[in-house]
Length: 334
Image 1 (tube, one colour):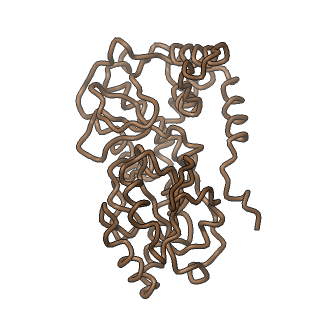
Image 2 (cartoon, rainbow, N blue to C red; image 1 turned 60 degrees about the horizontal axis):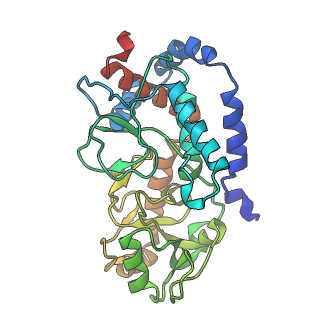
Image 3 (cartoon, one colour; image 1 turned 180 degrees about the vertical axis):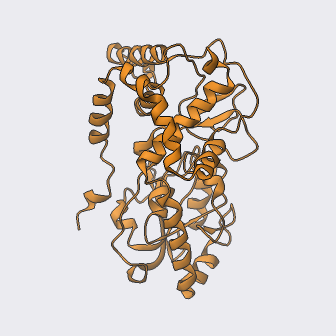
């Protein structure tokens, strides 16, 4: 079985999204109303629950003086890209957030050129002072972080796992950047030698016993249990792990994305362990002996993932999240 089937190939993503950029915006604006009316094709209560989860604002607000319209967003993006091409210094490079831009642009294009929004690209772990579009947010009472499905090529990667749980190794695996969070450092330093754990740092290279280099998704899927550990914000791997026939193992999430990590239930969708991983070995040993319970978690996790696979419905929800933003900021009355 080729390992390439588990890769999310960015070249195809960029080709598709760049072609979409060539479609005149007038076309998008003409079909917006018909797109929003498609809510009647789905379970309305479910759709609105998702919209109101991502956009929790209920009161009117004003966008800031720094808010941008689509033209301004495109202009800023091009300036950053051209600036990087002309820069002769590595430390002078600007973050371009190309995938964030492309993912937001394809939905922003449906709305009139006068509409503006505030946004924060990147791994957002703070609560904005003003309502802003973000990819990630802390899982706490928070109305100002309005989630959109950004950087989806990296974060929304689902797989078809052909290996059965019973045929996998009675062990837990993890590979990742060991330097971008304290919890990962603690995990590696204290548990790298546990016999039923194959855990290791893949980057950066360090002269430590827990540095083990890269391991493909294909190879990780040969283990019954896969740790998903938050880095700067969410654990990127959680989506493909929960779509597999292995069990996600992690502490209670602190951050969430379009995947609604805040809705995941401990020991229903994943095996929850202490934040210091002190009970991780015990928990995994338990589920090795009680594999029927592990299979129930896998079934629930797969079912949870399935709700994100209807791409037409996901598009509608994205448009409704933005429409609610523009409505509450008074811009639908203009």
